[in-house]
Length: 346
Ligand SMILES: NC(=O)C1=CN([C@@H]2O[C@H](COP(=O)(O)OP(=O)(O)OC[C@H]3O[C@@H](n4cnc5c(N)ncnc54)[C@H](OP(=O)(O)O)[C@@H]3O)[C@@H](O)[C@H]2O)C=CC1
Ligand SMILES: CC(=O)N[C@@H](CCC(=O)OP(=O)(O)O)C(=O)O
Image 1 (tube, rainbow, N blue to C red):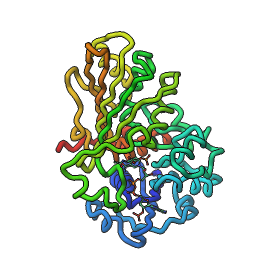
Image 2 (cartoon, rainbow, N blue to C red):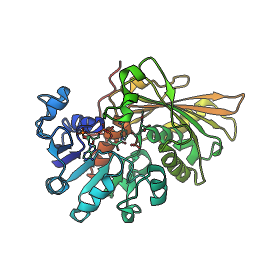
Image 3 (cartoon, helix red, strand yellow):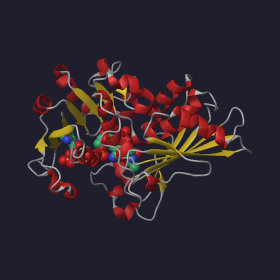
Image 4 (cartoon, rainbow, N blue to C red):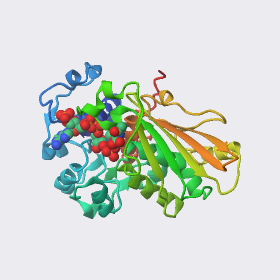
């Protein structure tokens, strides 16, 4: 049995980690920390977990947590994880950070975009970016994982096959992405109120969203060339889900059948990526509550453009599910353990 702790268990990602790990056959949850719910049963904080998980939320004491755990999921706002990891580095336990502290190769890029200094830059060269479909081999031996952002997961999985095979121009890629409001976390704020979100769609942080450098970093590695995409995030009135519609110019005109064949081959052995048949465009409700990333295509022959549509659940494949997929790989378990359930079609 793997002893797992969740630091920040009372957030949306923490809740999803507890939910999935509670039915994982090889894991026991031994610790769950909170700021505001100390001493409360997790089933009282999240009534859907009532009677399924016997866990009392504790105040964060990282030394206590590390001693009882084989793996620690850090599910805190960015800026906290690097300092906590520094405190427990000598214990040599596995750490998966759900936030942004370990996603960047460069300390400078992280500090510029996140506006905080990095507490543990010396480990960045050993940290692995936890996108299993791309980095599976490196994840096997990693001790610290930077779990990818939710938008980056949908965009990188959508573009990896065409970039690695040099099929599209790298200087004109656009991703128009829509996210559910749970992407903003569980903390209360006026802009996240039901009355502000329902019945409306808005773009935000155009050209300056913090996921842009993360997406560019990983796409550039795949393309072996500098990639700078135009990324426009939107909030839509849903509780879960991300849909990214990605536009890129083909170097040579091709057919949808050829693109589908390439993607099926590239993701052979990646159980959580499902490639749609011709003319089928994924919907967020098909992946709701699941660890799947569904990808569909269209070719705009007139403009020589490939349009890729990629759908994930932001708190599962975009966060907790992907983290557990990484844990499975790190501990030599089948990658799909505890994650097999299909989406809840709504
Ligand atoms: N939501 C999403 O779709 C995704 C989120 N992420 C990342 O995952 C991480 C968690 O996100 P999410 O669950 O949405 O965030 P939430 O705001 O919902 O939850 C944050 C958690 O951290 C705890 N916490 C906050 N500040 C502190 C602190 N100073 N000390 C100790 N505990 C603290 C909170 O406790 P309390 O509940 O008591 O306030 C809560 O348990 C973030 O880094 C986020 O960017 C990544 C991908 C997708
Ligand atoms: C809708 C919404 O607000 N989404 C969040 C997604 C951020 C997130 O979860 O990303 P990190 O893990 O990189 O912090 C945002 O745009 O900031």
